[in-house]
Image (tube, rainbow, N blue to C red; front, side, top):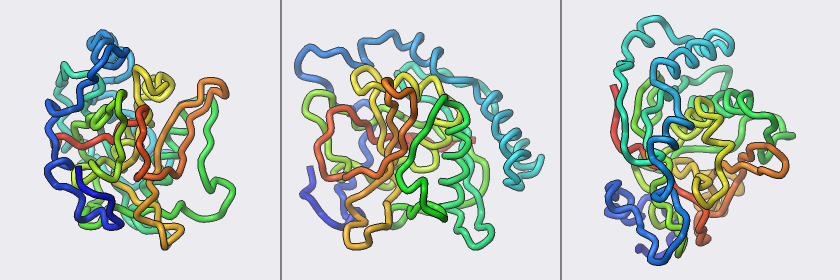
Length: 255
């Protein structure tokens, strides 16, 4: 593992680029996603790409995102079945700047809004303050407006025995808007999170830019509070060891 650094740009590239096969394996008996029936999990949580594209069409019309028929026609909806739990193809959106709000923050707010509509209750940090939440991408990451299909590993980096520090494994493939898109498309996945069979998730491709003196240390994350029946969008430290959290990655570009 790399040593703790205030610069996410120099995080260990080899770890940040880890393959799915390199996901940590528990060293003692523990109920994990690997012991849950894979077909049942993915079938229960996820919907086909064609249905996701229909969701985006609906949100596009309701929220004024401005995508055209050509944007939708460019997405390949051919079904793909992944045999690894919590790996799924996701139709993600990346919005342009509008009304003085940059595309990164606009995308964050709009996808969180769409995700919030799919669950009984929701809560987020800074929700009572005006303006978009202070987020940006990891240094070097690009925000290109459009609709894209990507393959997302929602269990990447999860070590339920020893835990992980997100700062040590996040990198150029760490997911950002893709996780929020998954939350919007898959409310069943959100409501199954408990950190034992289904991990909570960091949005490791984002950096929270306030407070500025510790911006490197904070990232948004999603969890489900079963007692309150709500999804939480929080601001969390990336240098703490966590056994119940994954750091999802975009494992392959889609069509």
